[in-house]
Length: 286
Image (cartoon, rainbow, N blue to C red; front, side):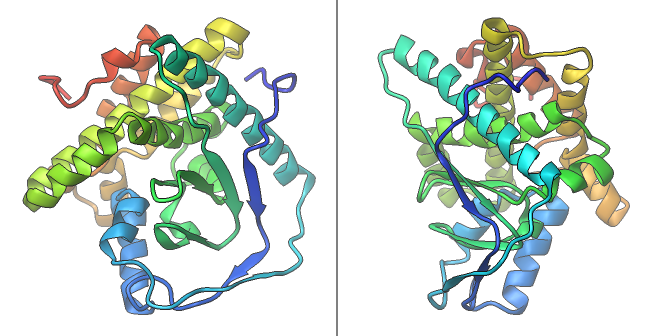
């Protein structure tokens, strides 16, 4: 990906090396561990898990400790700031074109664990977006898992991850997240999971919309970049994650969509560049 000359975003909070104390989710202990495993193994949106946990049982405290940072980590941070800036430019333009104002989210970089408005989260949950404070949360060590565990190396695969979380922010600004949350609160487990899948696939499509406009405006794509993004989408599909974790697949428990669905919706956004083409809630086929 051609990114070195791109604008850097100022909407980054670097909390790497901040030690998070407190009791954590749902009283901490086994409850937090179970929730982390659910998120890690089954692709559950951590913000949803945290909200359902009922918040914090105790007020955590953050303490600053030395955080050794390698040149490679600093390069990834620099890259993330460019991708974030690019999403700001793309979505800012798209919102302006429809007579709306795009509120830029902040990206929080952390190591190990972090405290958000949605609760206490561990790195095992992966990147997430918290609608409570409208911030994106990322432990950059996730990219090692993305490359090694999910077979999706490359800088554009990393860009896809961030663009997907920005997609959730877009859903919040458009009022989609609130409507889906209300519908899920009235639904049974299977229907609730199905609604969450549609949310995640739309965020994948929105990530594709960003990629379309970023490349159209700034020619950021290099040969192999699309393959990297599609590999990332496939690598975190529910069917692949469940197969790895349990040896079998339970479609009724999907919360993010299959590998094929995630690739297809990202590609739909990428090819069209039109957010209106990302209506996963009224589509006959997911």
